[in-house]
Image 1: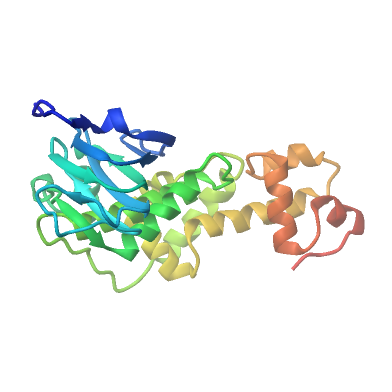
Image 2 (image 1 turned 60 degrees about the horizontal axis):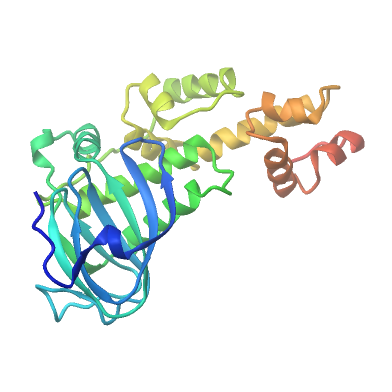
Length: 292
């Protein structure tokens, strides 16, 4: 149980202003953006771990037991589940929190690093410079934003990349990934290609593709890129564009063929098609040209 707030010290929920919250592909993870101004703040979460990154401000703020260690843009903190700390906020700060459950953290680690779940314990980190994690958290937030047209595969991959670095760099024990000398076999590549085209109009996830060849999602993504030179998400997008090109040779309405080729809506297909081939789907159909 958290300690009772002392005089003048308020709980995190009482002082911050929420700007947006996004639930990720896994229900055990979410990202929120917050703003907070001057004050003494107590932080406590009983049901999840927290990875925090400062987006702006914080240069005069500190955790009260580490007064000489100041915040700043791009610096990260980790607050393990049931962790409690007090912070002195002395300027306007905008920051993001990545929340993830202990089960999600440990199961991801066990699945992708071949370790017993007891090997994974999140350590406390205060104002650490880590551009890699900062960049991956920003990518995850951008990929999941409400106006993003990112596919499920892109979202899965962004979350996987972020969790992988958290396990390796924020765990109390030294965790190293398995090293692979080669990529996917020819049979595995052929199987994935068939699977993608058989399900081209359906939402495809990293878990679905990986489980079909009995790999963890993160290892599959790494080995796929090693073999193919592009990510699974990029490969599936290429396949969908090829299907869209073929269907444009028919009389199928463009709004229908966009769904048949796996795009979430027509505007997404039109924007993607135009960017790749230099003409809209309608222009391509009218011209009868062959796009490269």
